[in-house]
Image 1 (cartoon, rainbow, N blue to C red):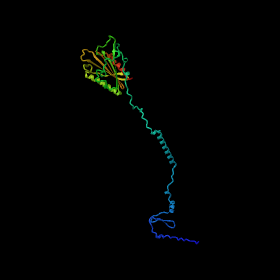
Image 2: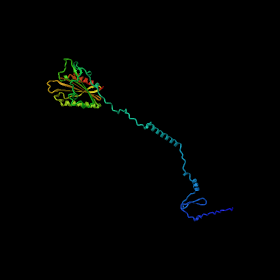
Image 3: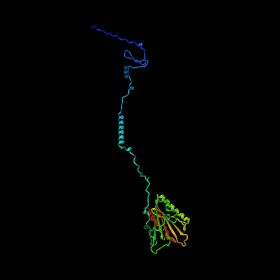
Image 4: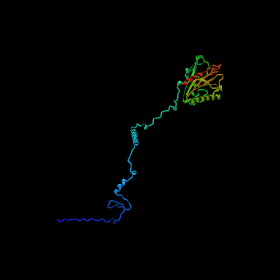
Amino acid sequence: MPQVTTVVHPVESPPAANIPPVAGVVQQDGSGQVCHMCGRKTKSAALEASAAHNVPMMSRPRPLRISVKAFRRLGRVGIAAVAVIGCLLLAQCSWFAPPPAPTPSPSGTTAPPIRTISKANLITAADLPSGIGGAKVIEYQRHARTLDQLSICQPQPLEALGASSMKSRSFKLRHPTGDQPFPRSSLDEQPDRYAVVLQFADPSAAARAKLIYQGWVASCLASGAPAKGIKVLRPSFDWTPVVAEPAQAEVAEVVYQDNDSSDRNAYFESIGLTVLEDRMMITIHIFYNDESPYSVDLGEEEAGFAHPQLGMIEAAAQRLSR
């Protein structure tokens, strides 16, 4: 069978010079190099590989390095974070707990408790000495004067003194049958001794109350007529200090008479003011006679009997201290 031979003629490429340059087109020449058109340079794969090896060391990224100190610091931070989270979950952190309530300062800034009075601070009949002729002092409340006018020289109720509380008690001399040292008077069915204890907020309030009461007595005597139908016989007087440890006490006496009185008999009314710290005792003693057999100054040569007011003040000082 005849053999057929196929002849293949190579197709020649047109000359490169005859192909017009196109912008942005990369052509490869026979040497495998890539040509860059229009002034824009495009590197071939071989050139890019060689350029990568030629990058300076300073422009390369450094490998991540952690020092031992930084690693330990990070470890401590991590441990603290875990502890805080655990605290929050278990609610056991003291620094997240509410602050404790403030405790009272022991420096004495707290107000002291308010004191009160009781029957123990009142004079009793047993505290008072017996009277002239062996007369016995008894408690006697019938027909007693009110606290609005405890004394003939008291123009206002005792509440005006500002006491927080008050307690009172009255007494009378009981004479043996047929032994009456003083003339008959309106006092026969009334007490002849009064005692009122007053409690104040502080010592300054008690001292102020004492000055107020002393002012009442002074005004009463200066007027000459403390009440309707009454005239003062001795307008001048002095407050006499009385020893009454541990308290301080003074006594004054008012002598007055009814306007229609035709004899020399008069009322002798003594007023005692005893102050101890924030308490005060007002004591009143009254009797009816032509003259007074009593004296508040036993140091005088012609002094008479000890004034009953002195025994009341002495008892008041002891009772106020309870």
